[in-house]
Length: 458
Ligand code: NCC
Image (cartoon, rainbow, N blue to C red; front, side):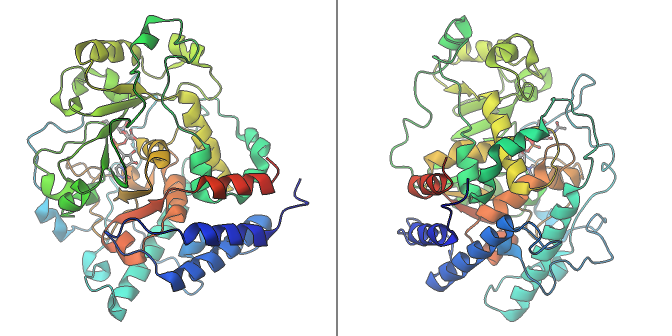
């Protein structure tokens, strides 16, 4: 299978790909020297993938690898309480924030970590002058803490039941994909919206309600997109203006904007909502103004191997179809789509392959699904506060007071694995990621991903 494979080909392609013109200069991206560094790191990354024992026990994300201190665990875990002074910036919004929990739900209740709030002392880690040695050290220290916590979180709760009947052996079918750059993997997952012609929706009334328009058809010349995580550490970010500057702004579930504009911006182009939000009365999906004047992309995972027919009939976690129908009839002007559940599990498979170790057998979070959905449409994506910055304040959401580390590091979704994979896609510098809370992802080139496919004889 690999006879024709040559590292040199991949490195050359990667080099060509990375020297394409940079279309967006809003935040600092690596200069040419750093590209060279990136290429040599990529080389190392490929090496790691080929030789599973190479760098064993060291981080698999080469961009984060720092032999000096990356694996030194501080005796004081990050899962400790400490009040973050930045919380003084948190303003309560006028909109009603998320409410959750139902006995019927197979979704998380976070019991274990409910009382283990998390923060990192900003006096130790925060800084403002990226060029200063002190700031570099602080950022480095923080980066390694976050990386360690994400790796540690990968190990949690792996023995829980396999509710979705996930087939972990399917991984071997995609064996060769181990060598793919993470952005190509995310693109290959092909997270997609359902179309009218998809069977069985071409035979049922519901399918006729799917918008005819292609996603983002009405937005011309998309240059940059922003994804706004709902994390507590969005509070105090003052990134509102930066966010609104993007051509597409993606938000999640019922995360409000009103009252939080300074930190989260005011523009919303698309909301990715999970099926709980569509169905549970407290979210008021068919009435609440939060779901107006925006594109909606609703998802429900179904079961791992279920067909669209099974999903439509009985495999959905929450029966989102009737409220979807109501919403579409009531607001035909707003484009509301359903995400193909099969593509969600395909994304899970890509994550599994990238991680190279067991991951939680539950669907990815809305954030990761949203990223993969957006990737083909945007040359650049700025994902805000997905990788927790030094503003980390222990809160689950910027719009609620609930303190819960699991929302950030994962307790049900394979969130830690998602974040490690996303860090691997990142092209922004450490200051931008860990102090400003922004990771930047460049859309992978067709040419790059396809050529690698060909090299690997796909
Ligand atoms: O919390 P949630 O996620 O709505 O957050 C949206 C996305 O932001 C990123 N996030 C959030 C909080 C945090 N501290 N760090 C983060 O990185 C994640 O990428 C997340 O996907 C969801 O993914 O749909 C989720 O929805 C909630 C909940 O259903 C809705 O908020 C509505 O109340 C889920 N919580 C529960 O079911 C209890 C959560 O597991 C996932």
